[in-house]
Image (tube, rainbow, N blue to C red):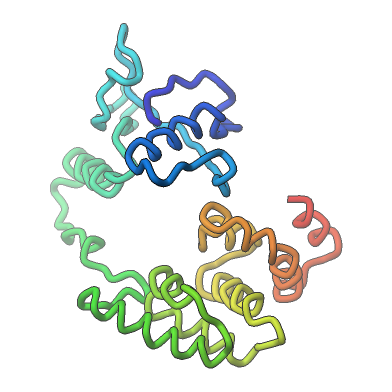
Length: 242
């Protein structure tokens, strides 16, 4: 829900029971046969959307449009908008800065919209499905089934093969845990993860979308980070507390 005014601690924003029930009820009304309850919720998270204040208007009445402001000191700020439009918002700010301060210079056109993300060199979705099939075959040889191939293909693209290559060389009697640690290894060596939270929240999203798996393998993940990064006992204790 985006129409709830928030006046609490901005450093400790949580999804309230009312928020959760609002979303469950909306889902149940749309899909009557699902009958979701609070017991079906695996995890939750919440954030705040900053809207541009207008006197006398409630949150639901305020515009979601972003606006650029320039202060007397020359500071350029942007406010409002939506997360889905963050690239366009950034483009508008950069264009504004160029118009104000770099208009006389010859600058290259922005290229970021045409860059391919690592592992994302697919021509079409058929190639994604082809990668899923290839990964499923490789994982099957290592006694891993289910939707792991789909998960890896969609999260890592062709870089998933790097993970499977590492996995193949570091198998134990617990393939599911091994796959988790292979992803942790990849996050450290290819995605600059320094702490377990970097991996389980900011790289994989597993804490949000598959909390039971994280609960199951959290200790091995922490032990793996400790070994790979040669933590002191003090650092090890601190990470366990987090």
